[in-house]
Length: 220
Image 1 (cartoon, rainbow, N blue to C red):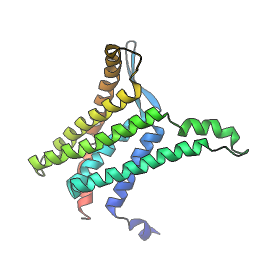
Image 2: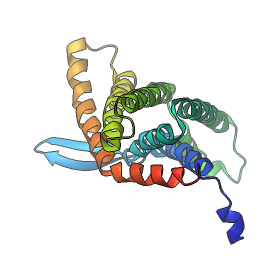
Image 3: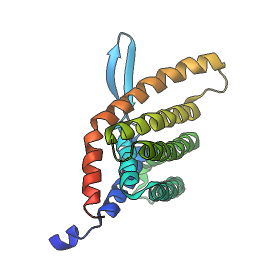
Image 4: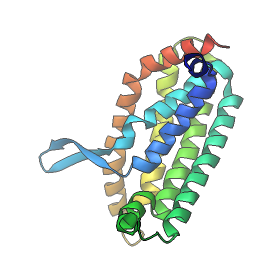
């Protein structure tokens, strides 16, 4: 049994973990928790903040070891999987429950049915940001070579996560009935602290990128 469990390709394990992180963010990201309060201003974050930076870091690891095209293929595959996951969630919540499950139907639907707008915003932002992350990291690798991995991974993450945060929050929370100025103030108040928190998480996870690249290169 031990030998069977150890017979796993490292890249396969990394891709599986990558998809799991995305699924966790989609499924559990609706829950928010308090961060800090400044007078009457209370800042909070989604629980997805703990896994989203890992997704971008894994992108960088794969580009560093296997190249830009392989990373792009993995992102495309992951997007199809997550799209299937979201569509199946909608399908499953529409099916009528059996008598034994009826008592749990409301909770089940609450957990697995997201609004179409939130789901579309999340998927759109993720797709754009993931390809941006790969593009920026690959360009920086062309410039710096194998040097300054810490800079390359954080620079690409900061840029792509700003895009991810801006696109998602704008698509999900822009109020069509409100004037542009009022929307802008509200959205910036959400975007900036959440993006800065993602940047902070990216920085403290930088050692994991070095460990991941070294670990993956041993198999190549």
